[in-house]
Image 1 (tube, rainbow, N blue to C red):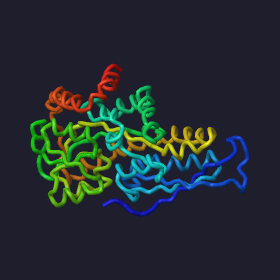
Image 2: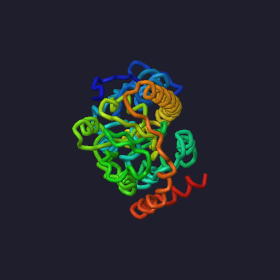
Image 3: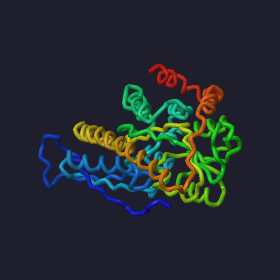
Image 4: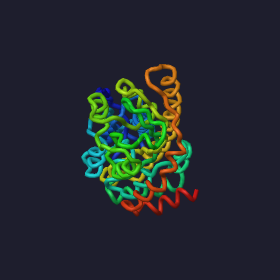
Length: 330
């Protein structure tokens, strides 16, 4: 389903010296591996590729970053753990799999926390986003920045989702994050956590009835081939971020860290713009193609379930409460 070609993108990192110093032929080079689960058309890949390009430019060509798309290094849960232990250097990932480790991140699994991608991104690029990134070092990770949040909508291989009542008993694949499982259970669905790479086949063979994802990924990963309806439920706006291993980060000089910080800031801006364009183009393609039924559900019925869903989430994840209050107070 997903492309499996290996894409090697070179950038550079000097192990000794400064930004202003010369980078001679004797400078030691480093090779880093970065992975993500999406295709090379995705904004995840755009972020990784741009990061590599900019680090190469800023460090005068002394780092090599190998970018592995399409889950070549494993699923997100596996890659996150590999980054924590230092056996993988960089991952671009959705935040939901991080909830297994960073419980505070479960706040992002609260339905209708944001009303749009732009609103979510404003929070993520502001003080709250910086605070959230600041939680990662204690778990062996350094957050280089949040790229665009993804609007996640429900698509099915049969059932039409028009109201919240239509979610009852729906066997839906969800991200392997505890907050997502609790949220969809509270909505009345039967959430089935599974790796993203397994979803296409699961829809095809009827192991699940539905998935949830952004319009661009719905097309890029060809779920349109195994789905009949796409409903703009807008339940979640999932952040995504660039993470580097703290073990690797701690071995960098301050100047090297500065290179990465600057490159990451530009890569984040680039990826946000990339997602915005892909999102708009995907909706136009879906509407024009006639291959899938587009549904505009009654969102009021979904939002009406929020108090019960929030109560269930807060009971299980009380550490999300301070973050929920901060986000709502903006």
